Length: 421
Image 1 (spheres, one colour):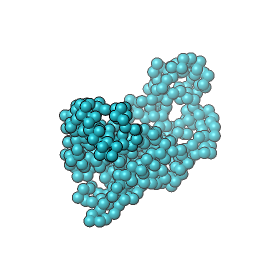
Image 2 (cartoon, one colour):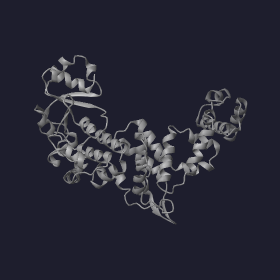
Image 3 (cartoon, helix red, strand yellow):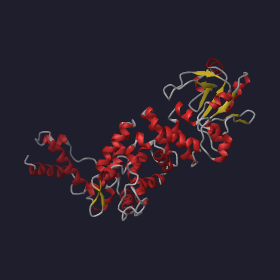
Image 4 (spheres, helix red, strand yellow):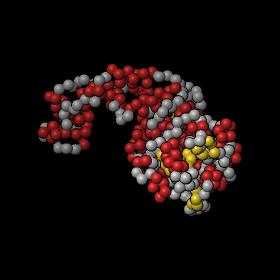
């Protein structure tokens, strides 16, 4: 059952029922809505009576009663709601482009808030007083920026000014909700514009001041003719193509360690900035409540992005280990974008691509010739030396110096002897 049929059935029972919000906006913009919200004056029990099967109103359809929110004491949740008509319901919504209704049965748009005019103007504007809308739910400040950067539209002047004045109050919103909006800003299109808005309007300083610190930090012009650290990062964000959440965050934070490590010697340098950056990225991602797996991957992207500088000089064992890094495609894409946004040279990128194409999977990740049980059978006691010995044997295997089990065992014996064991 589709969204049109749901409205038909509700109207056939004498209820008012309309498509509402984002699906109307998307339809008027010529886009296929991902989800449909249906607003009605039927109460929950009446809706259940008409649609007794739970699957009728599924993941892509949500039916809710026309309502008006009462006071927002906590700046997030209304203290209660009262049930009203469609016009009052429209006026309690966030932005004009999200406040329209559509009757699909008679093909009529119902616009009580000027949404169609703002669609034509291509402007993001709150419904009514922007200060009031943002105090009701401060997350709306981030949502305004998300829509502005997704569509590449300007924020209406009073809406923009209100965000700047109220930005410090975003601290009252949970880190999880902030994270979700930031991820959408980074991955739904227009990420450079979104990050610039977050910084300029004061929001980023509240939940990710480390990114603000990149603004104005100079880089050596011979490697970064494009400009400072933030400019470089914004260019990279603009080159992303349908990034994963982790890749987008990795790009945003890949040089976050540069501001605290900035120094001028023979030239501008950022000593150890990848290590410092990894630690900072982990802290930022923990603060924003990313999952452990996400944090691990984002931190690895930050820590390893300079390794590409040395791939053509690496020992084959070192290179193969690098190529088998978990989700290496994200590392490779970050490197590609990093190069394109600075010096433009893609020789190391091409080298890694060629290596991946020419090497068989078993050459990159061969089945181990021996393991810890074999070392015990040799009469050795488990301990830190096992890791060194097995690493040395694997290096030899990756480099083609040993290919058989007996060769691996002989090499293990030699390594133990070199360690005095």
